[in-house]
Image (cartoon, rainbow, N blue to C red; front, top):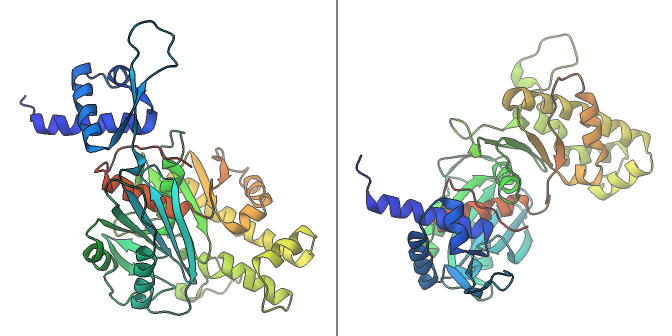
Length: 385
């Protein structure tokens, strides 16, 4: 069998870079043992990386007690460049700039008050242009954009909050900044965050995102699963059974999104308390003080969320289910409640809170952007959190 030397060299470079990112600081000798590559090949590749400033030399490893020449340690240069990540919800535009190891450089939030997508894109451009000059080798290397809605092949199919009106977000920013631009669903990016910002080997997970809308990001065999047309995980569309006996048209039945998103729960609570200005903080306060109406509302939410969780377990059999929701973060008893309701199932995976409810989507976008910038798609990289 003829092996293309260039293909083999490219494979080895990606493998060595992965080892440095995930295990650094590390010596060439340890890399050689870890990867099963000869020392000369590893040393040659590392030398190339150092010349490109992709990797930094830290000098001799002074921690070793052996006599003689001590091995040189190298580490990934997270300042080789940076990535910028946006999240566009129904009410705010959020931006996060990170180094290439996932560490935050800058974070900002701006309200969106019924602006058009062209106005929002202008806000995004302004945020980029107002960033300070970061200390990096190559500057901006990639941009990610998270949206609430269905994304297929880099295009927005549907979105409940913003009218994208055939506006080419990817093309707009790619032409402006001459870098790769990634467009993805926010729940999918939350799932990527849970996998890539963890040292655990997470092969199959689901991340349930409950904010203005409801979605699920699905990782199967370490890869993001989006379905045939990007609709996998759109659990907000799940129809809620009608309580009455009379059959109604399916289009007339409510769905999980319209009844149990965080926004909808707060509105329901506000109606119960006859307070139009009711907010999440009010709901948490009333719940913690034992308000019976709010307690019943949260119990109903737990019941319906348990049904959806059971459906996700039956469909994907994940090793873990994460929940990304400010409401559940404030009322952690919700997860215990759901776990109890699912005791009828033979095997229920751990139901856990997201490691970062506030930044999960943006950091998931950062992971995708970094993978793209480094040409490391499909390679497991472990980032800092």
